[in-house]
Length: 153
Image 1: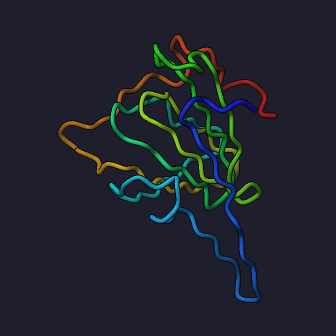
Image 2 (image 1 turned 90 degrees about the horizontal axis):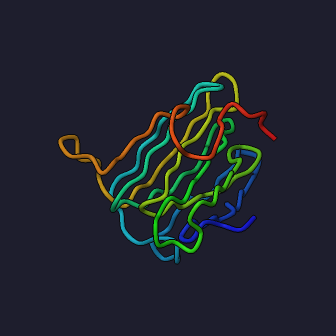
Image 3 (image 1 turned 45 degrees about the vertical axis):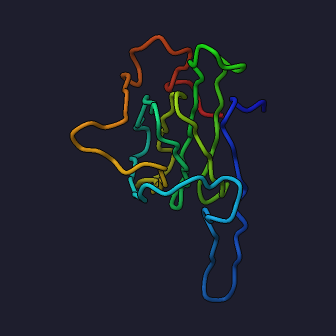
């Protein structure tokens, strides 16, 4: 898959032993890291879509640590070499990935597992409740060329 300009993916190395498993998500000494804003956890129920939105300043770093999600990115940036391109990522317990979404790229995710999927995001900016850097579209009624209701591959 050709990635949207600025979208980056890192396979997470899972280290299992007789106690369980461990995987590092993001380190400050690796190329994907630029700055720290906050870390938050969100859940999504099966079939539910959380999206679409984009940020003007913030970079997101998504990892699904429980269950599975389909994360979708759409490049609507006017001057981008990948304008109009869609990327789909399946991430979670069966596909341990970190996906970095740059500013200006619409993104969202759909829950694929029961009873829920658990998602960690490490954005580069803290959430500002009074003036959030978040610009939203309805997930199903918009001009983006993506149908969340399509059969998941």
